Image (tube, rainbow, N blue to C red; front, side, top):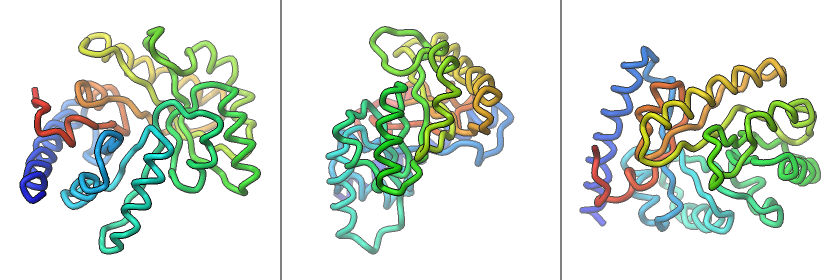
Length: 238
């Protein structure tokens, strides 16, 4: 595990170098965005290693994994405090596992899901921070609101109790830098439109993953979600 910890530490330094360079290119302050370590493919020990090298913000895409990670970390009270967001498809029968555990749901992908989360959150006496997952690229393989759908449903979404919408989340086409840039700039523009429609500041833009996070930061992302690049020594930094 010591070797893995050293690899993680060196990898984080390389990531931060690229991350800050992208912020500098965009003329943005160094604290304008933050890194999320997506721990969905690793165990508790690897998550602990990530905490030890400096990560404080994590994300899981399965409620049962979120529960498992939090239980494992609870056995290590000496570790610094961290937060977990929920990403990925959230089934309605798993909502209760997320409420009170995740600090934000990044994947509110439909009005139906938003209504279900709202109902459960109100019942639990919670207000759940959330992002609207939007399919800006228009790919059929990706979920989320289309830009037109989220505009049309903005008024009802903002009226749902138990949800505090903080911004948008999107994913870009893989291995296509030009399409990624268009997707991220489109998400930024969509957020600007929704601010006036919803009367909310919507400051959070969750864009960019292992292959395209530099482009995302240049286009205004405030959260970048890093999985393979953060945890796998076999992932090549380009």
